[in-house]
Length: 58
Image 1: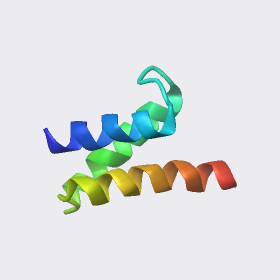
Image 2: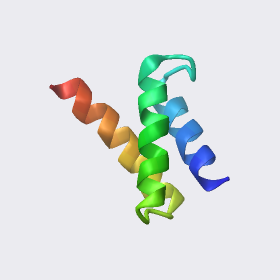
Image 3: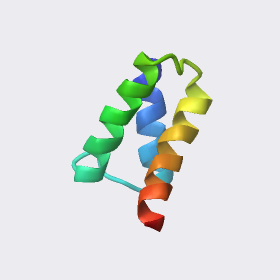
Image 4: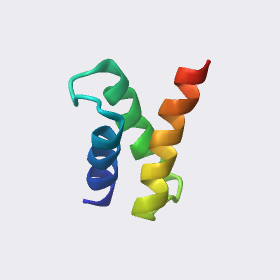
């Protein structure tokens, strides 16, 4: 599934475990982005990583 691949790929790049609270937040975001029309796997992965990076800069 496209969302799953983008999500798991993002976790791998970010060095996050699927059990971490941040991973749960990013999973929900990935689903939301997909439901609103983001259906390109690479762009979805970049959006997930960007959301993580944005949160960590605050």
